[in-house]
Image 1 (cartoon, rainbow, N blue to C red):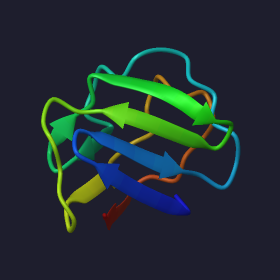
Image 2: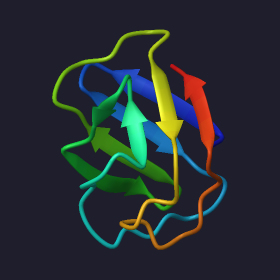
Image 3: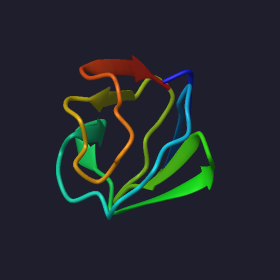
Image 4: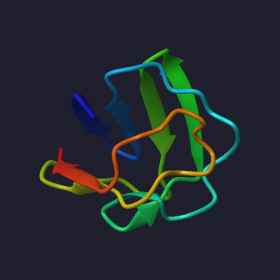
Length: 83
């Protein structure tokens, strides 16, 4: 992850390579303040936008705990950071 941003209940993670989605986020491989995203879309080849059940604020943590089965592109896990 080369950049992360959060605006209310929407979070983006930007990666160093294009991300290929293969389905919806249905597990806790990527979390935001312990929340599991309800939806994810590519907003650019390298950026994923996640919709959360409730908002996050500055200082909230994002965590990639494992390779998401719904992303075909390999990601570095574990990884984490704060907005």
